[in-house]
Length: 402
Image (tube, rainbow, N blue to C red):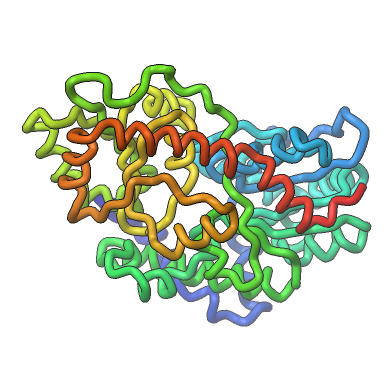
């Protein structure tokens, strides 16, 4: 159910849905006004001075799905550099581990505080990965990440950009090639307009900076010209030793981080009907922490992922890493790119929402085939998403030769 927005939110939504049409000067004034309306935290928590010596990389400040922290660990595990990540927290429900974690309102902190943040970075880091077109130093550079990048480069650092998804994916582009695209839904019309404007604005601001660009999902390689795929990372492959589909009724899990984007409305009637018939045990959970999601996956036989976007992301990889069978609707173009880049087929059981019942019945009837794909999924996750490939992609983008 989509909540009714307040008049203030509606007004801001109307503005943000048109920000890409503003001149750079007017857009900058609006950005300053936005942060002026937000009070910084009373207890300003400065970033600590790093303890370990040696070359360092900073990944900040989105940490979407905990990936900033995961990529930082990947760089360290690969022996390429010490690495830290910042997370400017927007929603406590989706808070993740981070080297430095503060409320996003930190962007409104006074200039001396921001200057000190900048000096810590330029004195201790050799490279920075800027996430999602978000500012690191607030009003110091007028909340402009492109200006921040130029300032960091002027201090001798190398800089790359990382995109996670809706921060740069144009809904209009996605809707053109996907009849079931969530961006076609009337319920998301207002939000889709905002996503469209935000993605266009990010492309305008950061695209002009001429920085190396990385994307976290393979579909975004087609959406961002010149970008390189830096796979999402999971670091737990300790799934149950018990093979899937050993019980009389398989446990099927669906965890929609966003039900509209995942296509929950397309598959829930089928899953509930199969549960009523006793074919499956169905568990749907929302607003779980990442740890709770992993625990739920651990107990599942099958994870039903997404049916509108045509992609796969952290949720599917987490499930594969635990030896669970993932069933989803993934574009052939995504599968082709995965094979082209990795030399491996994507071991996700393909089905549309329309054919979900047939495919779940097939899984139940042919458990050995399902177990083989689940085993292939764990092998794929370890080979592609354990961090070594991602570390190499970041090293190339940042020219890490120190």
